[in-house]
View 1 (cartoon, rainbow, N blue to C red):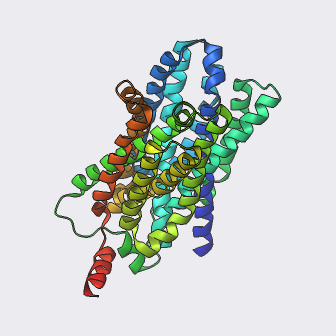
View 2 (view 1 turned 90 degrees about the vertical axis):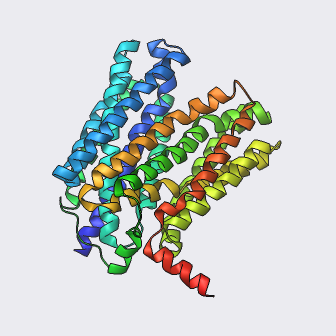
View 3 (view 1 turned 30 degrees about the horizontal axis):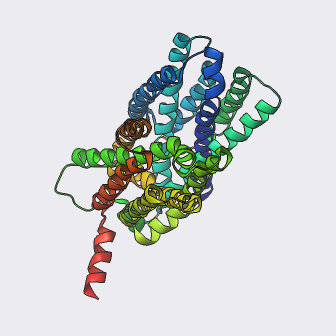
Length: 399
């Protein structure tokens, strides 16, 4: 049993890396595809809505399938489909074919995203201790791999279609090869009772449905902040601070590196302090970080702010996904799909919301909205309170 559990954890790592690599490969090839298809930034922005729509629909479908068929069936199947459809945007020659390609690729990517997160919940449940954040860190690693592959393809003047096709074919092989390591359709029991108690929410006055709604809204808020950082961090350093383009590019790298490091450390913090504390103090740290970004006139302090923002946000989304999956093991897929789906809407909306606000205020002043959202998340972190959290609070109160 212990060996099969380790194999399941490694396999889950692989699928998270695969998903991050596939999405990252599309992202890094956007400029080349945009030029080939001959569309404006505005048209591309509209087409990206279809990518998000496809992903949202895919998440809802995959959540139901995981609960019916089991993650062991759905994860590799969606991994194959997502890998196979990666090449479609690279083959597109006009806006209409690109629109269809993004809708299909978004759908399959959303399916893979939710199914692998549901399986990650099963693995965490079986381990009896927090492991979710490390899986999300591997998604970030996939983005790094995509960047390296794209750089190599560009140096050899490989076309986007060829590069995306080769990586997609490799992804199909990987998705099939690691299917055997996944857990059976029925999630195994938790390793220890105490760890299971840590994951279980304390008795709540409102229904599970209401709690899922709260978790989904928090995911939307947190991922809106992430989406804003993805698109506006480098622009902020270049246009507001006045840094050179080469220096400004490191703003996102600083944020992403801090987020990856934070996710590698977050599981230990959750085991020690609880998921509620990680969400509360993480979002508070992010609020401080983005406030520094908003008010700082210096490059070095802006880098520090983006690093704090990434570090603070790093453990938030994994805790929300984990709480959704553990709320009802029989409906883990559906619950994760609800939270992830609304969170993905936030990820897509973040850049647009900040962009709209720049018509009214300066870019750095628009970031104050992110400070407010992080503060709201910190205030609402009690939704993750468990019996163990209440025991800690009573112990501290007794002192």
